[in-house]
Image (cartoon, rainbow, N blue to C red):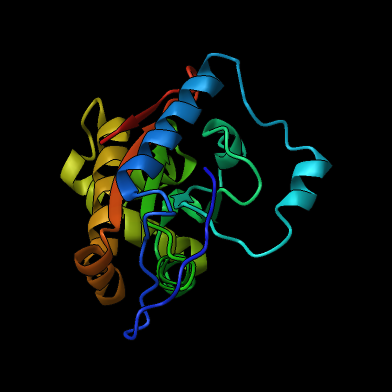
Length: 212
């Protein structure tokens, strides 16, 4: 994903130009990068020379919102180099003001044309929410906030359903996509500059990313 320069529009939106990847092209590059990763043929080795080369102005082509799970290193599974993608992580990619602000900054200030919300199988935050709802006891404090944000997807999936974990994961990922799409700055960017916001799920065993 080769970044190029852009200029901001009068309303503060920094639009994609013909020199930058479109949202569709940026998504195609992430899909291709995941295929390289799964095939064991990564293009990027994350060497210090690459870090130095990308140390100037950043012009990424995507922002990926993912979970904090240590088994899901986002740059690696999409085989992306320094400067190619912005990464925002929280438990089960739950949105709060810091996450929203980070995504909005990437879109409006860095002219990122693509936002990907990436969930993953066997998510610990999803599992913790299922167990909390089954026991009828929601944790307090910050952990309780995570559970409350994930709970609607678990309820919709069916707390006692055999496939509750997988279904809740996909429902929660799609819900996060819809929440982002409803944010006024992002909705405006979607209308005026062609920004796309999509969901995807990562398989821990195969390394494959499936788009929703």
